[in-house]
Figure (spheres, rainbow, N blue to C red):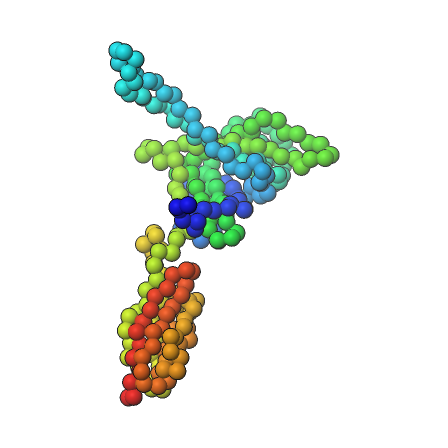
Length: 258
């Protein structure tokens, strides 16, 4: 079977963040949402976050019934989620405009929404944050009884910006390669030289992983290595290897007498 299992994810946890239309996005998937965002809290995992796409299509046929073109218009995207908590954030979506002491006829207001899912096995994070805004409405009835958790299903209609962008997408960057610098190193017996391990990710970002990589020497009687520091033991040569998240890189070390 062809494929890359590392690209498969099991989203075992999720959150929905809500903020005003002026709310700033986090810098990246590893950065937290700011104080102007609020959490809706517990979600029904069985319901997930289903997405629905609607659009009008018009098929154009030539003589003889040959399909030559299909036009599409009035695209509409919605995302649903079911909340289990009664808190200030969920109440602002279910009863917009109401207060702690009064419930008024709801009039939905534009909000920004951030949908986040996490894979606990790999540590991956994926976010979709509305570029413009969403309108959130209750889908169906709210059933309160003594045997089931109270659950409210909400439907968010996503409005694109002028460039037709619906979401800003953030995800945990994937490690692409590892490099050790320098690639060759000469060190005298009893002396210490330092190496640097740099990880490069699929979003072109880099990270110094020298202290977190696993370092080994092919010939510890000639040279040892700890956290990127190579020590000459006896004249000769050794290959020093750095390993990090499935990637490896090496440095050819020569140990001299002086």
